[in-house]
Length: 327
Image (tube, rainbow, N blue to C red; front, side, top):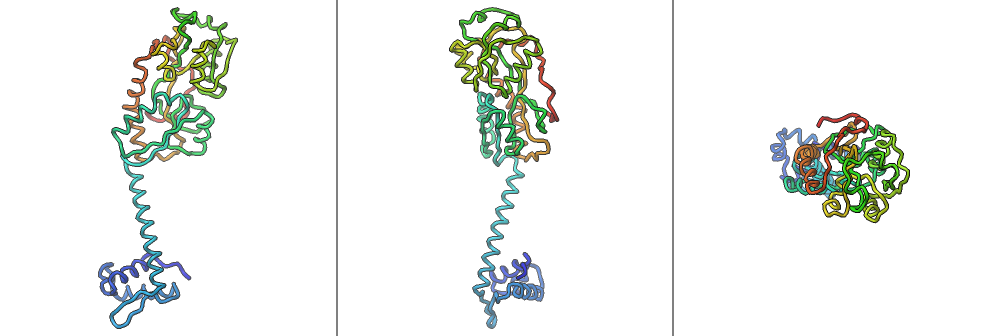
């Protein structure tokens, strides 16, 4: 059995609707002889009669009804497909998948709240992962966008710097350094440090910073999350470097204090990233534009009530972002 042509099925459907070859030819702007010819070819390809014509009355056979059902299924699938294509072209409707590293959960949901108010028909799937999981998702091209701090040169991605990510040195309010000013970096050498696990972006930046400054931290306690770090520092385990976004609430409440140490805070960047060559759909572009404008302001507002020490040296020691995208 040969596969019928779409035009032949259209003609058959029109004949069925009108019970007339003449009216079918008028609807499709074809000659009646062309309609009859295409119908004969379709019948020959199927191998069974599709219509019965007694006098002027046309009746659809059982096989004909099955063919019409297949055509209706195809038409419905095509209609759904065109709707989906229309949705892909929309700038203010659709679904976006965003993944981020752990620390951005302290500010990014507020950005989403403001975005939803302006674009209620755009749905965002927002999930939080550790750095290794994020890198795997980027490699597998799972999400539309990724919110990250450190951008590895191993990844073939484009990154748009989003906002500053200040890394601050924190302690308990009763620590010996808590009320001191301009604490020299060398004073930290004998302190007990609470640090993130190897592989985290913050841990990398801290290790790199002290290597560049030629300062060896003698004591380290590794904890696997920002929350564990804060609890450990509040419990007296030592001092630690953490994103200001992660510690803003505890600083505001006086549960932690921001130490005034030479060259702190370390100013790094939050980046909006996506694989190089990724097709940015119009609805994703809408979200990107929002992040680069209003999203910056909303994110910074999260820190308004936190105790922020202005940086004395705000030059990042991070390596340049590979394949930077235009902001």
